[in-house]
Image 1 (cartoon, rainbow, N blue to C red):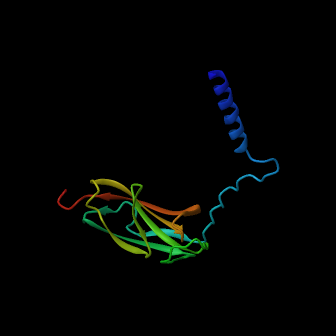
Image 2 (cartoon, rainbow, N blue to C red):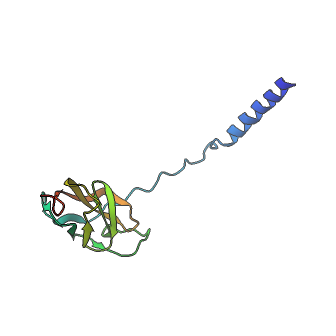
Image 3 (tube, one colour):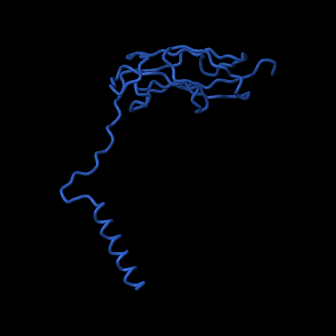
Length: 145
């Protein structure tokens, strides 16, 4: 009896597996839509590369050419509209809708840090290729010298 039960279960599992296979002539699952490219070019205007930051707040300014920032998140993507993402050492600090902001440096240790801005599409997902600008700064907290 156990052999018949095992054989029945094996046959049932083969039948279920066959039902999950695609039918002949059925089109495969479509691949994700490719990401759009952007007309924008992003630079970090301030701080300059290798700036020594001695204050607990860092003022960051971006320059964006060939595109503009929108404050609406949408799936209707265009190559010249999007948002700014600011990160330090790969850690996202903000998703911004303006070209400048002040960032608290207090959570960061003294030493070099990579400041990165990225212009992303209006759905907050990167363009392809990515639109990124980076600078290295040196943080020396107040009173550390």
